[in-house]
Image (cartoon, rainbow, N blue to C red; front, side, top):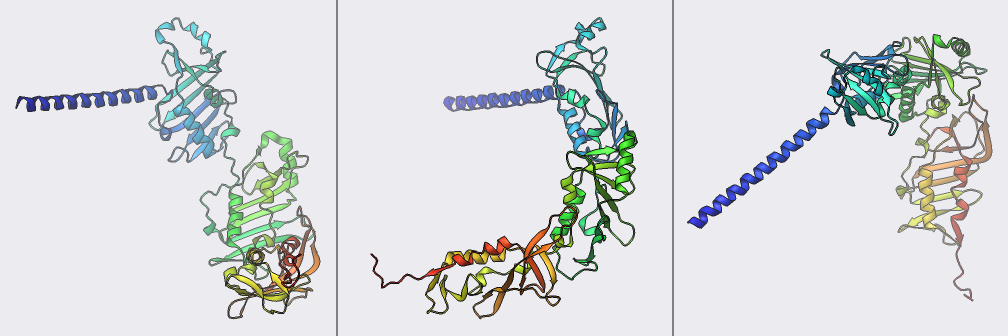
Length: 482
């Protein structure tokens, strides 16, 4: 009985010791967390901040939040009034609320008299950052000189007399300019969705005869206004819309850049390209015109959005992504969409190859046993795959409008001998004149049974079909192997 009692006493003692150890460990961890939090100079969470004032290396910069959310509804209010860049503001808030003191250099009791602050550059600080929360409370961080040995800086917070050592991130914060924090999105209609669009117009007024691409939504489909009734790739139209939405300014040109603004407006009076987006038949919700910036080393363009007071510069690459012709919106894959697995017979009528080949247990053989040639099954299977992934460079005139000399033909049939796919092409290189900055287009005329228009296909794609290499003479089994 005594042995049993002592066993229970020992177990209880171990349990109490373990509980104390766990509790003590938790308390130490909580203390460590509090200490880490105490090291941050700005005690507010990012989503509580509504105003940031930076007096640093540039003109005083002030940003304020008008709506809810840490990175939503932010605006520059000084040195100019403009929308703020959500990403740049979010990065700034993270820096402000997560940067910690590296070390407390001097305790407050050691700082009397106050002229000793000159040692740390804090009598006349390098800069100040004031952060205000939604409840009106604020923190002011004063940044002094840079240390000579590790590029950290001295700092003080509010009325706390202690001198803290902080990282060079605070120098980056003090270097923020209005340009860094200004919204660089050219497209301000952030809530506009692709499903809201009813019409897209891309025009080139400077061409000899104005070239206009106008797309209009009809239910779930899109069509080209005044053009051919050709299937359009909705994915390409949506991609175009996303390119417009993602356009970002490289430089803002306003009244402070008087001569440059005058030169930009003169150039834009005869724009090279105009992009308009409509959600109804009324005025466009977005209208932008662009013109190349003369003398630019980087191929930039002036751009002006209707209703804005300033002009911006944008990259040449972003303009090229919006400079579309009707061909860019056609569904170029549709004329070649067949299932290779359904093909049981292939008929060739080309300069390189003539004959009919049939599939037999996954192997391809000549339909006429008298043809003393065998087909490479792997290459023919690969050919069918390439055909099903071909893409038209151009959608040309309707099949009844004119005649191209299509001298080569390839026909695919299923097990019921019904035609699945047929491609016909010519040998003459067709040419299309350059348009704007687009080079001359070169292609072969072609047609398929899946399109009622002639197509322009890349010469290389047809040559890469490798028809000449598909077959080889069958070796003579009676010949002497020696």
